[in-house]
Image (cartoon, rainbow, N blue to C red; front, top):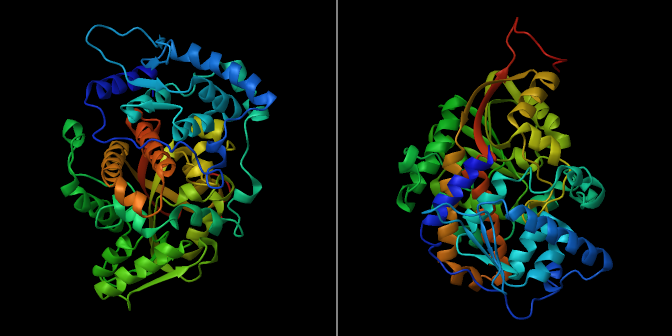
Length: 456
């Protein structure tokens, strides 16, 4: 990914109409019991000093970015635009609070300041694309080397041990089935779809084709795992049951594990309503505790919640339960290997507010771990990041269109701004190529095949 790539995408998106919804504004008084970091602007000596430094670094960075940053006093910062090109606009409402939050928490502060209303954007995804395209150079290199000593690190209680994982998963997936129902399609599938469109046509896919695109993603995974009549399937990460349903419709028997009680409840209901209770078992269980033997193992966007230290355990567990001749098909969000190595121990806004304990793998990390610590081998990959960008666009539009329903469920304006930031932040990663998503097919190392490291 280059800055030019991201810049061009953001400029094109800025030339489009503003987002087709109104972003809710924070209340005048924020509930500190619910949102302690949003209710109060950091005011310690450290925060004030760091805030001044962060303000200087931010302003120096945006002067060379394809972005307009507008301040209340009329100042506009950003790279000079060429004729006919419009850059995304970031509007500063409370610049001093923005600087204090940025200084105190780094990129955590960027997200928190949006949640608090310190800044706004007519097209949040386009603004985030500019930052995503230049993420490695926003902070001067000498200062990047100091971040390990300054920025917060992942709390020990959020490491994905067997004791902590249930809590980490619950904080996201047990928010409310009704909340997820406000923006997911009828399949209740919370991962990238696989649309039939490509190229420019992909950028305008509509909601009415969404369920079929989600089922196409699932069907491709099941095909690659060889799931047919009589196949014994292990699913790691149930979601809300759509994959288990489609596997059962093929005549397979499915054992699915989840750590979300909310997901388990709704998935079981969907399975029962479809008449597949005898074919599908859904248990509240850590993947490490799974026993038995399975002809196919499938797992959709669950490896991101495993944690860097436990990827080997994840694949060793899969290998342990995989029957001779069995196949594995996973869908995984991925990141470039150099970015993984630079950020794998970081504590980010996404960790704090969305996915505690999560780490996105690189393809190289998956290949290295499976080759050196298991007998599994990657046989095939399909990269489909552009499909995730459009999946997120559809979720974003649906979520914001149903803002009143979300509020009626008890999720306030701060939550809605948080969730919007999460969706746009994620979409920007896929739009710029900073993130990708892959369907990866694995099976066991074959007799006579070279082994790198010690297969177990």
